[in-house]
Image (tube, rainbow, N blue to C red; front, side, top):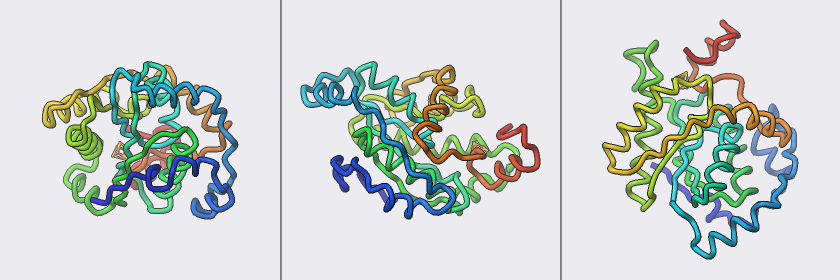
Length: 236
Ligand code: SF4
């Protein structure tokens, strides 16, 4: 397990990103520079953090920055102290994984979001986990990610966990919820259910405005094949 507290390691002050350097790291395809983010609401958030005025310490599993931005805003507006958690062994190939991860890294630094990375490019364990039932693979995919999030939350003093996956109308929302509840039971930590789906469109629009890398398929190689063979269908 390769965990790193990215923002702590790099310093939140690094939020003033060196865009050209960042884009080199992100590769050619997604090299459009990020636009600067309106941070006017963050001084209040930061001062609440210093005063310890938060209602709950929450670990938010994050699948990508375009899905996460409205989830983060919503939970912060509720007064929760958030930490992001990146663990997505379902994203392939590596260049796609890196583009999504780096976009989140940059965004997290810009909004002062602590980000824990379990930065394993998990092609092999993922393929092993789903190989016996390719058609029914999503349940294994959800289990890998949400059980890891629940475990990290339980072992690191969080009051609850949730996931940005709950914003996507393309995911199997009920299955996600059922898996998250099992993960919570298993690790004795609270799963905070939120139906973020009404915010999906707004989050995508904002992602475009901010110049985020926006993926064209769900994540795994199988979903990439489905995306291009059946353009109307990203996930079953
Ligand atoms: S389609 Fe999406 S949710 Fe299903 S296994 Fe692939 S990456 Fe995971």
